[in-house]
Amino acid sequence: MKRIPALDSIRGLLLLLMTINHLFWISGGRSPVQYFTSEPLGPFGPAEGFVFISALLAGAIYSRDAMSNADVRAKAFHRAFTLYRYHIVCLIAVFTWFLASKYAFPEHQNLLAQNFPNLLTAPLETLFFSAALINKPSYFDILPLYIVFMLLLPLLIAMYRKGLFWLVIGISLLLWSASGAMSESQLNAVMGSGVFDGFTLHTGYFDPFAWQLLFVVGSAIGFQLQHGNLIRWHHPMLTFLSIAGIGILFAAHHGAFLNMGIHRGIIYDLADKSELGWLRLLTLSMWVYLIALIISKFPNALTFRPLSYIGRHSLHVFAWQTAMIYFAAPLLADIRFEPFYLAVMFGFVTSLWLPAWIREFTKGRSSTQYWGAAITAGIGGLLALNVSMANTADNDTLMVGNEKFPLTIKLKDVREPQDPVVVMVYSEFDDINAMPSVHWQKYTPEEANEGITLDELQAGKYVVFAFQDRNKDGLITLADNQIPIEGFGYSNNPSLQGPPSKEQVTFTHNKAAMLTIHFNNWY
Image 1 (cartoon, rainbow, N blue to C red):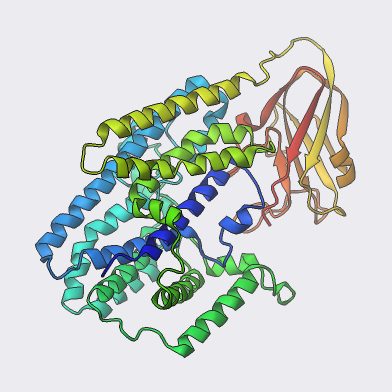
Image 2 (image 1 turned 45 degrees about the vertical axis):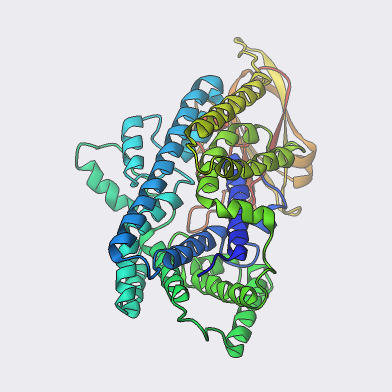
């Protein structure tokens, strides 16, 4: 099978979309751009497409007739080891950045700690289990998955060569249907009974027993393409059904059938991402079929050279973005409500072309010195930039005594103009999951937008929590997955990937001040 430039372009596009989404998520930023980057075409995302294309190419490249099973095994294991080296380099780079941040901008420790759990409390265990591909920090899911899949590839190729396609697919489907049976809590129960008592594993967002189906099917198709066995794979009726299905799911995904009770909550239950729900697989399959049909009829229609450039060097680009989003997180979190946030974020996005260029520049020679210089310069520059941002922060010390100062609270991004908002002010001694001792009151959205002033608030440390009380019960309402379905926000506007810690949302009140809280509207 010859190289298909359109696949490089598509893979480059998927890398671009993943990077943009990861930068938004890790920094807590929000923008209309996300409507075009986060599952715009239906209930599937760039990660699924990236894994599938990588599997398809692996199945084609490693199944050439000139390669014996022993050759396949040697080359696949070598590739897995290469992937593992990049994974370790990324872990070390992020760990180094984490240590630097502890001293350079400690106010962002919680932001980084959310995405690299246990690193502060159990650094050795965290690094050990992460290196063993068991513990996975946020955004470190795909490389460990692919390493394991590459180790399994020689067995898959050997079975394909024996004509055991349907047996392989059947076993893969059984594993997919049983995925989720082994939970993270069960693994932690085993861990807690041994020498690692107290250490909590984070096994990653993607269930490997579910995601292996993408790799198995992709590698099987790649094998068949390599051997010319898919001559009559398209049919007018199949094309019609795919286009119709894509159109219906696209409309449902964007709320066309709300009057029938079909909303994104229902769709996502059927298209679960971590366990690869059947609707997600169906949607991806229809898009894969349609794109394959376009490429077969118009080979250059989907080719775009700038995207092909990074797509050709997907390993290096993907590894770079895995570490880069951690490097960028403190700065982007600081400016996520500023008008220039998007410009800075896209500046980081353009760095995706740097590892591809380094790869081209160092081709045929040792790249260690170039990569070392690039990573050192990058970390140094980002550290200086983040420190300069941190030094502009308000460093006033807390005044002691009975001084009192006004605090004005403004709420932004309140979605429902007719429903009241509840504003709660906690002292530093309160439990932020209970009722506050300082202030609790309902206001109209208009009042909250103009500013709510507490005239005489004693100097001290406080937490402000506000939410829109859509059902008028005075309590924040949670969905079955414990995610708030009413708009809400905290002081300091933390980047949330779960309930915040008290330290993340505590602020010092020692002068007349304005506090702006941006609501999170997740439903």
